[in-house]
Length: 140
Image 1: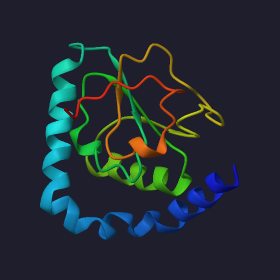
Image 2 (image 1 turned 180 degrees about the vertical axis):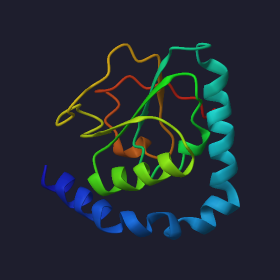
Image 3 (image 1 turned 135 degrees about the vertical axis):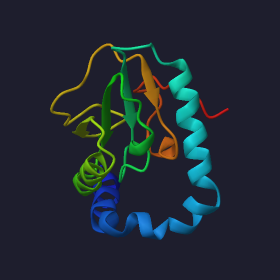
Image 4 (image 1 turned 120 degrees about the vertical axis):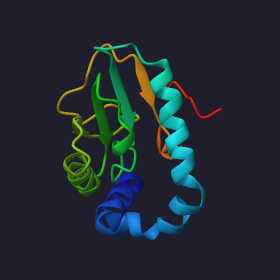
């Protein structure tokens, strides 16, 4: 538990500059991978009224790829990362319910959505306890 607090503190501290720290990787490869990842998710979504949970939303780099026809929930354990995601929701004129809490355990989440049909997770996989959350991976 002490390790979780250290990690959260670290992410809270770097959240405002996190995107600039990964800028080169994003331009080199991750940006294209991210676009392909979300295209694959969109292909698997119900036509409308579906529910998607993005685990480990971070600063919201995926937000510009969010589909418009479903309910999206995005969760992260760092409140400052959530704040950065809010900025991107406004920037890209997208809608999502941002949830703060422990992704793997579901603890400290103010509202946990039911009947999620798609779980999206990309670069945060190593931060999540897979035995605690059903993950549907589309990065193959």
